[in-house]
Image (cartoon, rainbow, N blue to C red; front, side, top):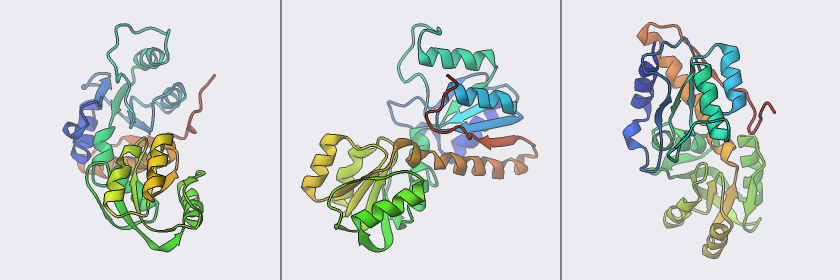
Length: 254
């Protein structure tokens, strides 16, 4: 297997051509022809994740969030991103990012989040999904259930006694999608981060908001992507080890 082979596998799951115009998904560091016997998946590439890849003997890191959103004029250790890229190059580790293409894909980030939240009758397109809880519950009870399911502390923005059955969602920093939830007749909207002024607008519209954390709403999809890649490997008659990072969010080696 080569880096190019993994790029093509991901492209079948979440076509890179579907990424948003602002995005920088794809092969970002390394050679397409580099051989790969071990892969590490992570939400972000950090120093700790690179060190984890080195310890595993991984030649390729696949992340959700890309590097180099903005053009670079220099590549030095003077800034965080520069240090990461130089570290990858020193260790001869390639980097592929699947960002907004994976957000939108069937069984991608937002479908994974909807399933993890226990929603049924899920529908939606692009970045937005909506679905039903098995039964209506109060907003406070729903926040507790979401906290348990996502392994995080969910922040409720709205009346605790509001009845919730239909929930709209968009992972990560997708709070701009709240208007789509309102138009779909949702009782609540869920995202990783919800800006204050949008929370006020949601409250004014009668929509309850659940802020669940960027990491918690997106990281589970990396496990789903890893499983999809592992299922594809036997058909290609190759033996490549695939791991999902065990580095906690925001953990660094210094």
